[in-house]
Length: 293
Image: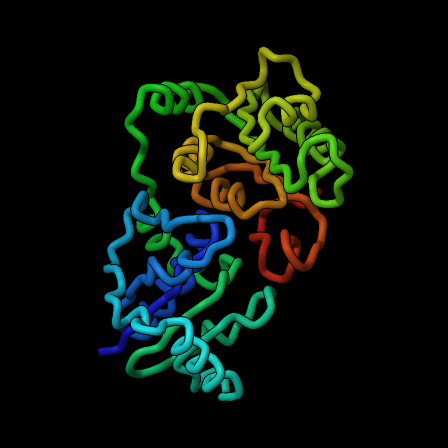
C-alpha cells in the first residue's frame, strides 16, 4: 500500500498548508495519508503545538517508527541528504525547495512510502480537490458562550473581517507591519461596494489595531477574548463566519478568507513582495479573484 507521512509544523495556518498539499498528493497516488504531529514541534523555538485536532481531518497520526524514532533527527538528516540530488520524481523524502509554487509536486507519482516536508503555501497544490479540503478543514466550532454570541453577531450583519498582524511591536519602526494607508484604501473600496458593512478586527494587538482603522466605534467590533496560541482556531472559526475580508500579510487571514463559504466574498490582500521570514507575495500565494492593494 502506498503511504505519505507528512511532517506537520509551524503555526496553525502553516499546518493547514502542510496538510492540504499532502492530502491531494495522497489522493492522486491512492495512498494513505499519515500525519507526523510530533517531530515538527519538538524543537520549535516558538513552542508551537499541533492544532489540527480542531478540524474534521480523517487521517491517523504517525507511529513512533513512522516518525523515524529512535534517533529521529539523525535518521531524518540522512534521508534528506540521500534524496537531495535525486530527480524530484524519484525522491522518497520530498522537501520543499524555495517558497514559490512548484508544479513538480502536482505531477509526483510514487509507489511505497514517501515523506513530505514543507509549507506549500498555494491553493494550486490542492485546488483540484477543493471540496474535499473544505470538508476536511471544517472547524469544530468552540462551544463557549462568548464565541457563540460573537458568531451570531457576525452572521446577522454584513460582516467584514480585518486582520492586522504586528510582526514588530506597535510603535516600533517596522518594515514588516502593514501601513495604515493599506487599510484605509481597502476600507474605501469596501465602503464603495457594500452598503453599511460592519468591521470585525482580529489582531495580536487589538487596541493598537483599532487606531489604524478610520471608522467610528459603532461600526467596529474588536475580537479580544481568544487568548493564546491554543485558541487561534477559535479566532479562525470566527473569521470564516464573515462575508468579506481585508487580510494582512499573514497566512492566518489567508485561510480565514479562503475557508469562508460566502459565494460573493470580496477579499483584499496586500500587494507587497517579501522574501525571508514573513515572506509574502511570492508566486502562487494569492488566489485568482482576490484583489491586491
